[in-house]
Image 1 (cartoon, rainbow, N blue to C red):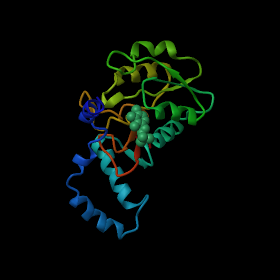
Image 2 (image 1 turned 90 degrees about the vertical axis):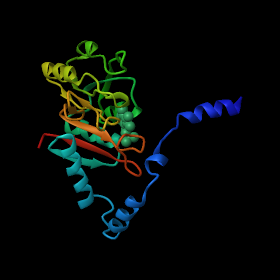
Image 3 (image 1 turned 120 degrees about the vertical axis):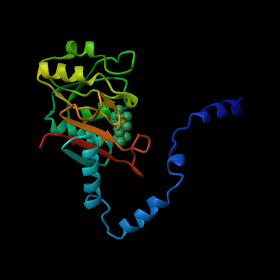
Image 4 (image 1 turned 45 degrees about the horizontal axis):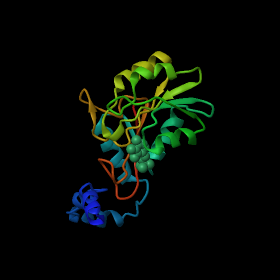
Length: 209
Ligand SMILES: *Cc1c(COP(=O)(O)O)cnc(C)c1O
C-alpha cells in the first residue's frame, strides 16, 4: 500500500530542476569567471540581467529583488499603497500575494475566481469601496487572467493595477507578455517558476520612470 502510494506520488515530481540542470558545464564556466569579480549582489551582472529581462518582456525598467514576495511589496509601495487602503485580490493564490498587501499595512479584499481559477472580473466592481487603492490580479499557475478587463475596471475607478505575475514569466495575452499591463508588476524567480535563479529571486517591472 505504502509502496503503491509512494509510486503514484513520485509520478508528479515536486521539481524538475534535476532535469533542467542535467547539463551544468556552461553555468559553471560562467560562474568561474564571475566569482573572480566579487560582484555577488547588485552590480553589472544583475544590471545586465535586468536590462535583458526588461527588453524581453517589453517594458522600460526592471529591478531585481531578493524574492517575488519582495517584488510584490516594493510594487505596492511604489504604487502608493498605504496603511488603511484596501487592495482587491484573489483568495486562491500563494500566501505572498496577501502577505505583501498586509506587509504594507493595507487590507486585502477578496474576489473569488472564475472557472479558469483566475480572478472573476464580473465580481470586481462590487468589491470597490472609497478606500480601494489598487487591484492585484494574479496570473494563477502561470495562466493569464482577463487582464484587459481588470485594467478597464481599474481605470474606470481610478485604481492602480499591480500584476502578481510571479508564476507567469513568459505567459502572453494577445501576443503581449503578462506583467506589462499593470502600473508596476512583480515576477518571482524561485526555483519552481518558469525562469529561475539558483536560490530565491524576483523582479519588479514598470514603464513608469
Ligand atoms: C511564487 C509566487 C509568489 C512569491 O514568490 P517568491 O519568490 O516565492 O517570494 C507570489 N505570488 C504567486 C502567485 C506566486 O506563485
